[in-house]
Image 1 (cartoon, rainbow, N blue to C red):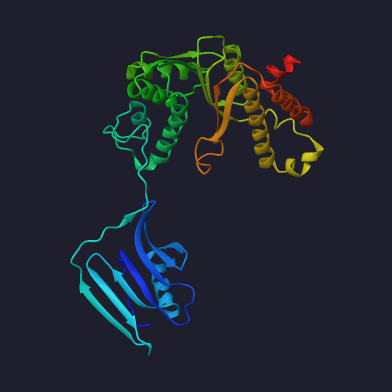
Image 2 (cartoon, one colour):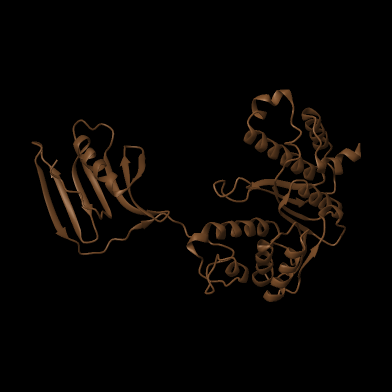
Length: 373
């Protein structure tokens, strides 16, 4: 077919129904921006529906020719400079016309601007030191996924504490604490809350480094101490954060939160070996022989027990995705907010039954429900 399709299509219309075309009444073309890619969207119309499909520049040329061969006789394509018109006569001859445009056409964008809690342009010292942000507040392109992850973490917390004016927070197993520094910045500098945060870790060098950074940033109410989560004792905190506290360290953190009647819990579990090392149930043979499936099942079983124990103690509990699965396989976050002092007996029995069914020990269960008889 003697039709030349330009490379820079902005929009277009395919019309003039062929006799054999009993399905479609017209088609439209529109250039769109989708996830930083420029594509051409084809919309095919029936009497009652419209079907959309996106194509790149090379693909759309073949699609347009196919539509003219099978369904339609007329084509109009608009670029930034010209409008191209084609008509196929009853004898199959192609008539064409090209004219200069009198107006500019705008590309449609399908990218919705995301409103982040920490917006680009804010100069956050921890983000600068991490290499996520320049000293002028511009997000470095290669670190954008980490920037989104950090904002997602803040959104999850912010959704729960929107009515609070002050909080005492402990970060169990704080490690290098980059999220703790960013959380402090957000709560103090942006939300203007009265905040005290304590970070706890086992490594002397980590604690020294974090305290020096807090001093450098001028974060007076952010302190770091060496200590084991198992032995920690305090009744002064109304929020605990555990980000990748390894294996049973998460259980001890949750146990302290329950004992303190801590109002808010945000926990990203990590390295859950405890149940994985115990699973020998014959019913699970088909799964147990594949290490990665056994590992993931163990992690899900562990977090199911933890979440339900929190529910038993009056917490409204959610298990949610912290980041996209492509970014990290350890992508679950347990969010719990204390709503009641009443215990749910039904949940207690369900947890006991699952412990018995798989013949396992689980640390948070051993520290809590097991001792209640």
